[in-house]
Length: 323
Image 1 (cartoon, one colour):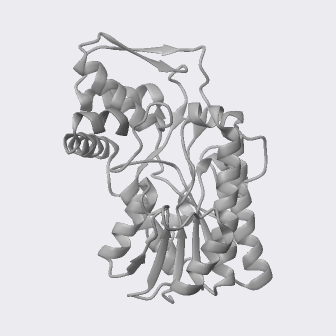
Image 2: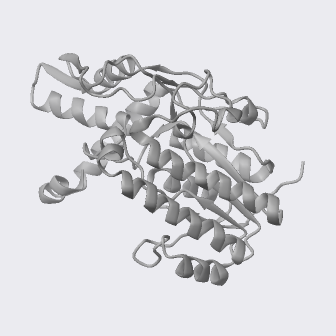
């Protein structure tokens, strides 16, 4: 099979300081690729003219579009305009800029939230646009669906070798632990950690605890991205998950045990649950020879240790505003 990303290729990772982008950059570097990056202070990816100019000047062999505004249910519900508009502007800028600059290869990273709220489980890629979305993250999901459509359009109109991957819920080192904007797993780690420190006897969580979710370590995603960049050139998006899920209650119990909190877990059922289940069918990616390697409990423990280490490197004043 032809290698679509030759060794020593130059790859621009958009969003290299985020959870996903940093993992992809680490993996590419470890495998001998030259990683190109630009901090937000030097390049605002929402600025189409500046992004195109950078890509024309840098002339990468490939682009990985991992930059996005992301967050959990609370953040999506509070800032729907930003989740829609910022992501649309980033995608339009980077994908169009890559084409204008003659970049031959691009990987756009979406999200499993693009699929209908009540899609048949496990969710196949062809479930896209077959039913209503989950209302709590609809603006973000629509932005990502627009990105898929943009990639497909460049493939069909110009023959561009651009592809899409749809990851499940991700976690790992460098995650966002801010309780106002984080996803469920880092939020649970922080909440149980603080409850243990304060010797509380209970932690109350949103929803019923019954929705089922799938979680993939971000280093496994990075490995999948490299497999796709090197060996996939199809029109359809490719799901990236682990093929297994668990309830939010089971996840909370696992995090509680890893962190060492001895108290009870209660659920506030007046708060939204989100989609009942989101398990991805990963047979397309498995057919390319990829499978995840990091077990959930091991990944949670490593992520917790990484977060604790990052906190210890900060002064008390910095820690107060940085987590």
